[in-house]
Image (cartoon, rainbow, N blue to C red; front, side):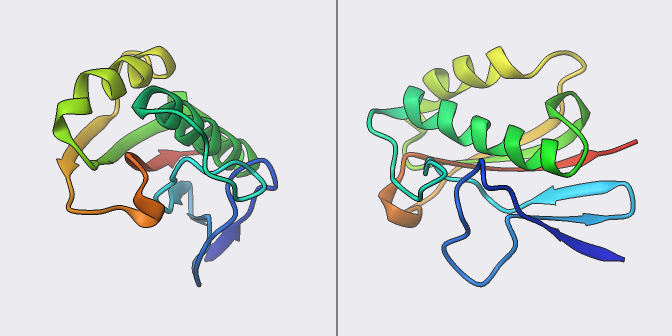
Length: 125
C-alpha cells in the first residue's frame, strides 16, 4: 500500500504531489530543490543549493524511517553540467560506499530556476 510522507523539516511540496511515498519497503522521494522548510530559496551557488537539497532528502528519509545509507538509486538534474564537479563534491560528503546507482543529466530548466534537483529511491528495514 502506498503512503504519503511529509516532513516539516524539508521543503514543502510546490504542487499536487507528495514529498515522498512509501511502497512496501521502498521510499521514493519527489525531486527535492534547494528550498528551506519555509519554502524559501537558499542563497548561493551550486554548493549551497546541493547542501540544502541533501538536507531535504535526509529529513524526508528520516521521516520515512531510513537514511542516505539506504539509498539504492538517485537521479540528479543540473541546470549546467559545468557544475557537475561542485555538485559531486557535496554529494560525495553525504554518501558512502557502496554508493547508490546514479544518473545525472543537464536539463533546460528547473523549478524556480534552481541549479540542482535530486530524487532518490531508498530501502527501509
